[in-house]
Image (cartoon, rainbow, N blue to C red; front, side, top):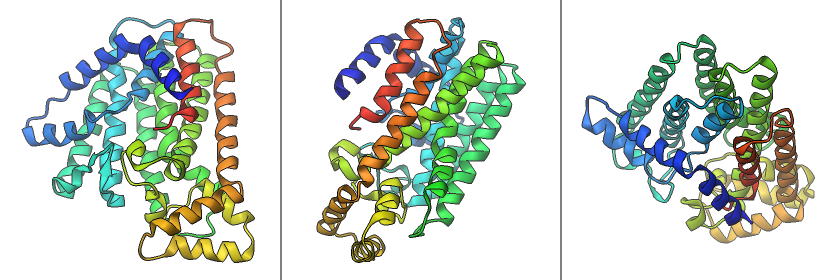
Length: 327
């Protein structure tokens, strides 16, 4: 089913995706070739371009279709790429999208500054809209994403991390960017407050579902599917919902074993496989999937007030895809 959904999204958005690629390349024009080389290493390494698509079709669902929505949409891919470049440095990640992480090829300082350049490029394009509300949304996105990363960093290795704390982290780290892309589509289209709020809430629920599904993949997908080694979250000391729920419901003996596995100084694949069995036993996988599905249902309900059109259909497909994807 995942392949079918992905294929349907690509078929419906094929022309938009081609134009997004052209725009991403065209507007990536730093003075230094090195900056372009570092940015391109990540930008053109197989990203799905979901955030630009969400912005484009949020605008079109509100009746906006001038062509500028394509140019404007790359803001959200630049911001996404910048956050990844920064996060990989902070997390000391080795791989991303099946390739060596940028900071393993260039110095961390050069990678961080390239991320800063991408963020500045996003703001430069946003300024051309002459919409103060859009600038405000982008400011909130960058502020919240930074705080989300700091919050996650301070909670690294915290074995008693609560579900509430986890939800706060993923809202800032992931949902806020997806939410902002959808909301800005409505603002660009000069939609009424009701439609803007509906698309903002659609984006929020989609972002929450997307991150929960991503956290599940760390325990259910292969290295080839992920483009990085499974168990990365656990190795980095990040407790995500599958682990949080399982730890809260495990027997004392299993909880102690799981905590020892999580905090072990060296990653052990056999131990990791046994840990995954515990996640199924204590329904951490099942619970996380159910929570993600609930968010998808709420996301699609937010679109009820929009007239049926290709853009609305595509937004619904993306919502379904967010939790049924394998990668």
